[in-house]
Length: 138
Length: 411
Image (cartoon, rainbow over all chains, first blue to last red; front, top):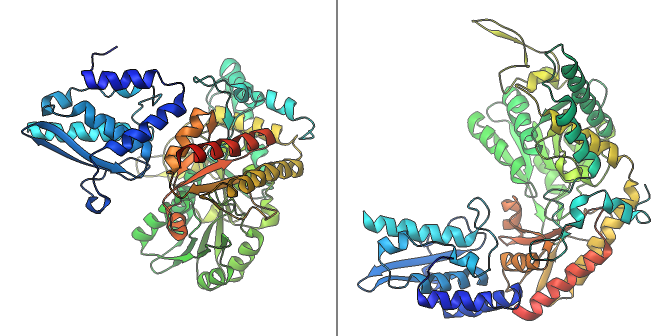
């Protein structure tokens, strides 16, 4: 088991204790409502996460307070995962983001597999975030 | 084999159908339009080849090579017989339907179509019957005409087809839609194409799994077929060509097995199917496909079709009663395949597919490699449940109830 930031660990624990997968999806739908939403009028090719079956868009900012992400998707599961990711990475530096493992989703027991070649909206989004963080490092 | 009375027996021949998934749920496999499951006979035939007579074909004189060559060429005969290939026609083995259509484009199209010539496609096509022709059209400066799909009836617009085929050199159409389940009136489409002086290729990837296609009777110039949707292994399919086509085609790939002699200056090519099968062919896969054909030969196709249709209709009707669900395709038709595409007005198709998966139900989500059709329907994706003869009415019921539960809980 990896060591996660406290807030993320709480989320992982909540998801792990869910009765079944449907309850986990319900929890994700609730997280989806909590995201700092990127209005669909601001969706562009630049914000689009390529490789998702759904429309998924993110806008990342590394300001003085570190990482912050706005996002939205027409898939509530993807938007919920975006929301959890935004909480997990909030305030981190680009170096910390590039070294962050996406395996927290497996520990949440939401997705069974993170195989890159499978249609996997979450992983494509996470890799895109890390690419942008690497870009910040020059 | 009588289908309904022997259903339990049939299911035991497909070991995967008894699978319990990692989440503890028994598998309900409704992604048959993507690929079918394989009976023991197919798995054992491929296993037997690798265990007992694995060898390359055509060249060596040893015993194993003889056995492998015989089995491989026997598989070609099985495919020819199954699809009613006309005498003097040929079975060119490929990796699947996509490869077959690419072979048609590069082997026949490139050699016979010239600047300004017209190809006719329809909005119903799978990408595998679009992209190879677009690539060829760009290279050879060809004109592509598109036949409309009527978005209310989910049928090809036949008046539009008659008009577009006028003056065309080649018509490339899907036999049975992988999205809508629509079976096109292929007999009529072939006749119209020929009357207009055009050749016609039919993408039979879906159709071959659902009906006995007789190429001789159908009179199409090319059929593109695949093994894996009709209980055979992945990795093999064929382009079936009618008499006289072979002489009009040029080799697409060079290498071993397709030549008679190679000199420094030039090479001479085989005068048979091998001309289009450079390199070591898909031996185990051909043997597996042949075994699948033998197995399918025991099925009563009419009973199988009726069984598939009753499950698909049950699902379509059940889904239509769920608030917010729209079903695409006309399931009142007698000759539709077992595909049921649907979409909920607010729940994304991907979310529904994830939730069904958590209940052990495998369906497909996305554009199904048919983006022009999606655009015609004004959508970007659907969920697609696709039934096959080994599915049960109980599975159809469970599927509808699962979608109902999801909609009630999440919409």
